[in-house]
Length: 254
Image (cartoon, rainbow, N blue to C red; front, side, top):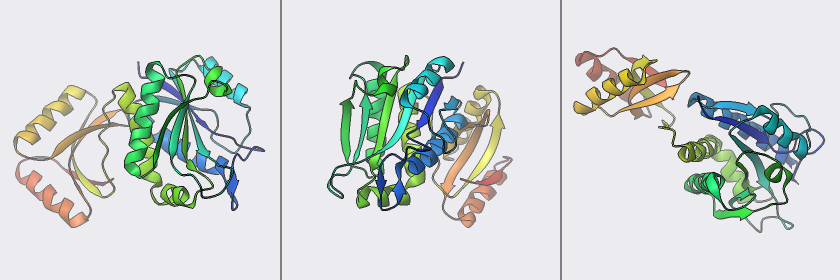
């Protein structure tokens, strides 16, 4: 069975969370949470949400929702805040205590976000937070930069897709789920299989001929791609090489 996870977009409804220059935490968290969930679903995880629209639920209600769903993990997405504007920047992930797989997941997420450009403030214990104290499964709360930091907001806005990928990659790293991620642009698909062994066989065959092949699981299929290209012309050049080698191909955008 696939891992199951509940994603929580912090705050919502009458609770905006942190507010800075008209920007509300609840909006950033919802948008980011939905993007993370889509990536995790494409990698085979069973994803549930505490909210997918602008509604309010108390932290206790969110914890009980996760417990009743009997999910394997709980990840809450937030933006941080500091008493004075533009004083502190960076990401940190909160846990009930520094033990077990939740600590590894928190560290993996922070490391991935650091690679995007955030300052890594590390993992902090917060045993008083309801969503960490009352959930029965391993739970983490990710503070994705400070809402009242112009530096973090610029990073958040300019690298939104990379941030979603980074958090998803941190979760997948912890669960040891394969998560090859293609950058934006074009690639050439050479096969799509329900059986992972068939995909692995094709990938190895392509690699033996020096084609840069990779297998990615999405939509219930194991898809084999070759290369990653910023222009359609470059992807077309690779497609011609693959066709000459006898492979069926399809150029797709990433």
